[in-house]
Image (cartoon, rainbow, N blue to C red; front, top):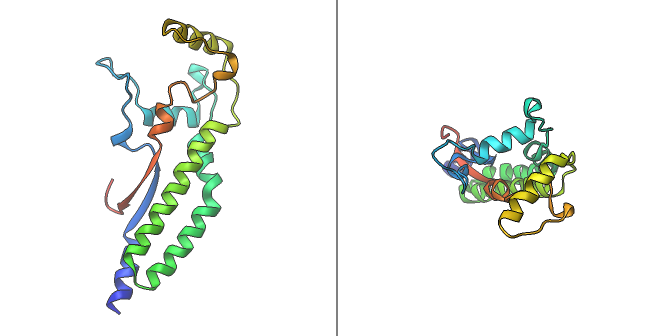
Length: 164
């Protein structure tokens, strides 16, 4: 009975979070001016910002939706592991579900489909690259992929229910 309770406690007391956690939100180009972080950028792009002419590009929301069937399979297996009284196996399933979600969000960021960038955005990126000595073709310039920082910041974490 003790083993079963331990397994059930592992199931009910942990959760998996997918996105950009605070500890990975910083950007390499942050300075004293209070530049925006990766978590805020993900939110802005996910929801859009009409006042800044940024269309919604819901990489996080849609990426997790894309992964739901596979995440659900892991959660069903997790419940079985919990009933068998194996907290370590429950933890393993939570991590697997997190990796599945993380990879799906990253895939969505890369693949879209997204509203095309405005010509002014493409021109600005080309000017910025040229200052660095790089020549960009239009096909090299894609939404959500200017520096790759937001993409790399997407991860998952397994936490206790009370933990932020």
